[in-house]
Every structure is written in structure tokens, then in C-alpha cells.
Length: 271
Image (cartoon, rainbow, N blue to C red; front, side, top):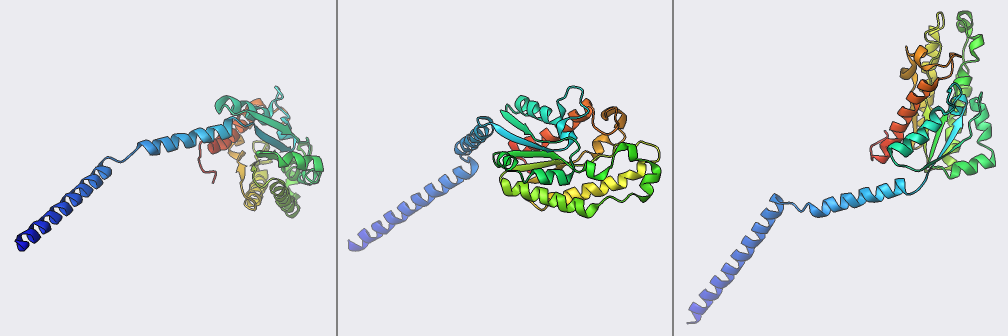
């Protein structure tokens, strides 16, 4: 009798283990074949909602620095790339935006470097989400009235001073606001299609390389290329002074800048 009871007990335990094992296997297989999507979707939707709140409920503060390109010289409407950037962000991304344009026409890197040491400008920078700038064209070209084939034969721009100034500019901006993204416009050659001045493109290439190197020295600093925008399009995109962009040129610059900044809203990499 005791032996029969022991056998029945063993059988009972074996059946119980079998059913538990079968249940666990069935549940595991169901989970693999039918993954729980609800929580993942809810989590992603919540994250998107949170991101939208960050970008759209708060006002985006942009500080614009630099020279006459940031002032919008050459645009008949007086809007420039800065005004169009604000309009595009508000229209395309529903992003409330304010801009402080501190650029000065004719400014060189030495001028901007001097201004960046002013307390009021540093305070303005400290509250910015984004800093945009155009600087360096006046360091490279002494002026359209001096540009001729004979001048280019002996002309050698001061690369060392330019590079040191650029490095200091980005360093100061980053020190005043380590969290702000910095977008700097690269350089185009307004004299590319002028007979005898096409050789000036070699200087522009070098200036763009130095700008790239400077942005690599700090976090969240990016170059917005313009050389390709104006190359062989000078008649379409340059103002009558054959140096500054016209309205259409500024539209192209603003579109490229807006697209780059907008990639942050979409969660894309800026690298």
C-alpha cells in the first residue's frame, strides 16, 4: 500500500511539473509570436509629446552674430537669412522664436572677438538656445574695388590671425553658453565668374577648411556650406554689388540653415 501511494505521489508531481512546463512554454511562445506593442507605442508617443512640448511650448531664443550677411545687406526686403529663419521655424515647425541680431556690417573676426568680450553681449549669449553667425569674408577679401588679377598674384591672406581669431570666437561663445548649438555659415566666392579673378576660389577653399577646423574645437558647432549654393549661380543669387547675396540668395541660405536646425527637432544627428 505504501508503495502504491508513493508511486501515485510521484506521478502526481510529474504531471504537475509537466503542466507547469507546458504552460511556461506556451506563454513564452505566445510572447515571442505576439510581442506586446502597446507599451512601446505609448512610450514613443509620450516621448514625442514630451519632445514637442520642449520645442514648441517654450520660445526658441536665437542670437545672430557677425557681419553684413547676418544684417541682410543686399536683400531688397531687408529680411535676410535671419528674418527668414525665424519665419520658417514658426511656419514649418510651429516653433515660437525670438532673435537678437547683434551683427555689424563690415565686421571682421577681430571686431566680433572684441564685441564678445562685452558684458551685455555675453549676457545675451548666455540665454540663447542657438547661435548663428557669418564672419570672416571681410578678413579674406579686402574689397571688390581692390580685387583684380594683378592684386591676386601677390595677395596672401593672413591665415594665422584668422584661424586664431576663429578659435577664440567659438571658444568664448561655448564658454558663455555650453548648451547652445552654434551654426556658422561657410564662405562662397563672389568673384568666381569674374574674368581674371577665378583663382580667388583657392583662398575661399582654404578659408572654409579653417572654419571647419575651428568648429571641431567645440561641442555642438556646425558649418552651413554656401560655396555650392553660389557656384556658377552668381548672376542669380548675388546683389548688384556682386558681393552680398540678393533676396533669392538669402532665401537659399535660410532654407539650408532651417533644414539643419530642423533636423534637431526631428531627432536626427547633426554629425
